[in-house]
Image (cartoon, rainbow, N blue to C red; front, top):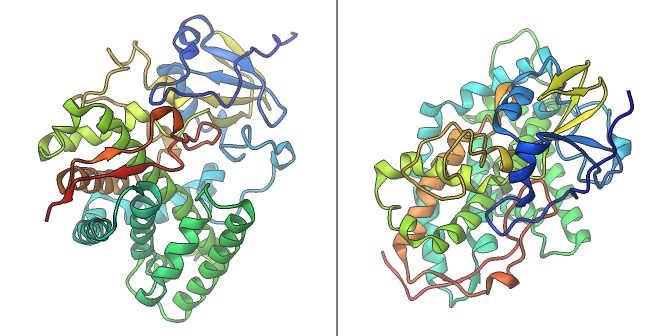
Length: 403
């Protein structure tokens, strides 16, 4: 049967600035599974509704994760079908994914992550103190969000104290879009070399950190250096810039919703409020890619084996069949959102992200009296063209820093 022509819904779409592309509201009803073209030159089936999104993400036997989740946005069709890198479980399915995920899962349990709270609180306080020593305006993303999240990852991986400034610089630079491409590429190469040396040192002299515990864990198939480096790079990719974007974009969203920002100092509200902010902003956007491994049907649409599906999380999280008044931010609301994904590939570091946000956002608003954005919204550079949404630069100012 001949497939319908691609629809004129361009990827990537533009947000305005917290809401998904307004066309998704109609698409969820009229074309819940819609064939569209992509920057990479191949078509995908766009899945925009909440229940359909859960169906795709929850069925790893039908929808494979072996292609990078942003392949459709990167303009690099030739990399489709390439073998997944060792240790990067986001590109694995089945037994190989289960083996990697089970090894890492205990490292990200709520109780273990909770042990990081004193470290994160001290880190946030130190960086707000540094902000107070400067004259505004300054870039919240570069001066606070990126270094704080990088140093949390360095603590988890066991980066030696004397090397953390190098680690912070390299990891922050490779995702800082204000820098020239050549400088970001050089930083990525520097990070890869840094991790290779770090892992070799852990193999020779393990300590009390995630990498060392993976090395020392008794198992029939221990991780080799390549897998350990893949794990480290995955944690950096999944847990650094994503959370930095949430801190930056979340700060801006709360400044635009002062009634909600007023609730930040209530710990009971923040237990659920962080998840509502994650739902409302849904920074993983423009579709999470999966590939059908067999013929199937979603919402009445036949999808053939080998065809790609892009699950639009920012649309699914606003589906009024799942949540009422989903376009409103309400920190006291509870919902089973898809901001961390769903199914076997659901974000492993979600408890860490929640903890960082619960600490960073209330402290920024408590200590930076008169916190405000210095740039008009029309001039704020949003990351519309990337898999992870955020703000490239957010210039803030304040009246005084409260101890």
